[in-house]
Amino acid sequence: MFMYPIFITDDPNASVEIPTLPNQRRWGVNKLEEFLGPLVKKGLKSVILFGVPLTCPKDGRGTPADDPNGPVILAIKKIKELFPSLYIACDVCLCEYTDHGHCGLLHDDGTINTAPSVERIAEVAVNYAKAGAHCVAPSDMMDGRIKAIKRGLIDAGFGNKCTLMSYSAKFASALYGPFRDAAGSAPSFGDRKCYQLPPTAKGLARRAIQRDTTEGADIIMVKPALPYIDIISDAAELAPNHPLACYQVSGEFAMVHAGARAGVYDLRTMAFEACESMVRAGATLILSYFTPDFLEWLES
Image (cartoon, rainbow, N blue to C red; front, side, top):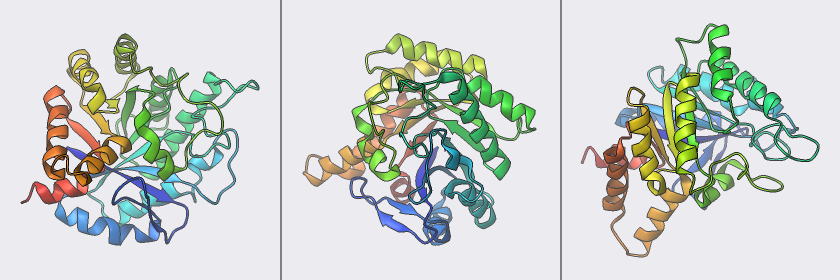
């Protein structure tokens, strides 16, 4: 039930340590065999890809997001060739690829322009499906993008071939810092609080979950996980017939490591306790940077 988030950069030979994310790296496509091979042998079943374009020119509509020669589409094809049984999900967002670092297209005043943002997000998702992704996972939080992606997948002949996993309840959390270092996705101005959920917005989260199930999401996700354990429980109640994912985000992962380094607790014990609470709340899929560790721990 663990899905491993990995960062794919546009340097094909990259293996670059991420200082704020312990034991994690940015990888180039030429390094995927040596990186993923041992994990697949240990039982790794699924990954979710995040593109990290460092050399390409970015623009206002995130053109590099679905570049056929960009890191994500090249990685999909490489992984399918090397490890045909590995399940490949792709994060779908524009923030890594826009020159302004926001998750959608903007009006002249810098606010989100929803309609073309949704259209562009859906276009990227369909192109990932065409490249061979088994699952597309929009993380942008643009209103209405689940319906648009589902329609796009159906029209392109992928309605029953590519799963749609929605970041349905994604909160404007303080726990994303290491990820933004890893993905180079910090906004160049402002923040994302106008489209991510306020931490206190339990009712809004519940409505977002219900909206996404109605619009055609196949999997519902809550992000972050541990501070929003009540929302995971709510999602299990509101969408009892859907698989339920949660994302143990970069800040959660770094925090568990920091506590262990400080001698507050044993790393393995705390990692298990955190993830077991997510399962107890109703999660059936956990996106976690601890996935390689759990492949070891669950065998020992």
